[in-house]
Image 1: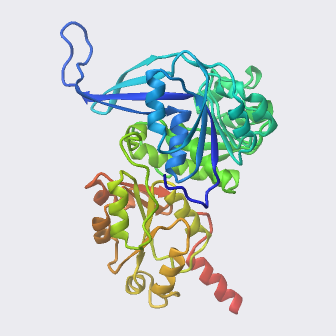
Image 2: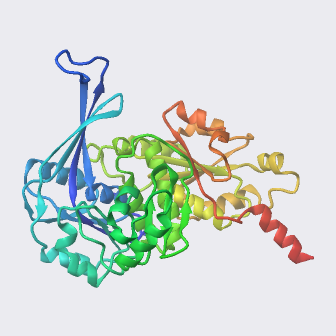
Image 3: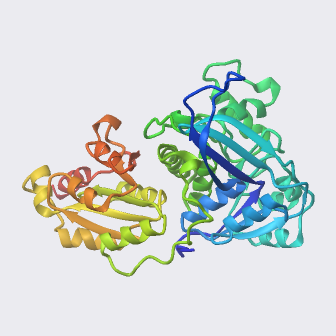
Length: 458
């Protein structure tokens, strides 16, 4: 597993599931009942619940320990095999078997879900308590099957960064930094006297949850609308960078894992929520949990090659079933908005290639006074960023030729574009890639920096 030493290790506590998709086609109804006949089904298993959140965090290049109920039953053994290359598992004893959730899909749309296995965590172990006691960062992924409750005393002593709650689970421990319920869940969690009557009274709902749970912040995830963040009053709506209506299975786990990782690395709560919204949006756009590379059939990514050859890097990552992310721009005067965008882009996959305009390309686009910094300096600064794995240069007005050579899985642009205005979106679709918008930090731009510098000189 390629672990980035610049990222804080994460301990995930929660309830592990084994998810199975049976995907086929349906073009007729059964003769004996009005139900579709799904044929030629391909089966695929993957981690689910807290195991998915932990797996996604590990795929981000983070050292991850998962504390969850996993037994020796067939589902438990399959889950252990899936997770072994990526993270450390500390199993908790179960009463019963690992829960399994099987979806039957036709034309990639769910037809029915079958659940079996009602295992619950029986008790905590000394190994789990010790791991939590010395953890630098903790995410609780509660699916209501007893793991969080068994370790509640340890979690209360050292409140976690993020608690992803479940209606069948207990409340987050007081002092938790961020709680991430979905919109429907949030209405059920609120004290009855504080439940809004309808419409967007989510501000009052958020405030009630912050007060009732005695936590630092609550963000209610709103699907394609983004998330509503509150510290107890004056909620902040963090909009999704784009609306995608694909398979949302696993999006909550992607959101929680991203937010916990960002907070662990020192981000503010607002920055973590913004990054998590962007990551969850890209996750759904890419196909949701069904599109996550099979954990058991791939080798954990080895260390990235020392060379800065973008072609060699992308070929290596793709051969190992990883996700190639690319981002582009002039990056003339590198500022906080650029850095935030590139850091968020890197978290979407296994490598980040920055496509940067040549000097001539910048002059054609921005005028004779630009770039301020020549290409060699811009490339050197970009390569010095920990989130950048390689830099590629293009001389044309757009990076389309370069993108055709690199064929990234995800192409990232700053949020000053409208979704329909991304000229590269159609190109990415040719090989199954996805163009994604991520928000810039407000008020940061090279042009604004130049203007302030000129005003100061006067």
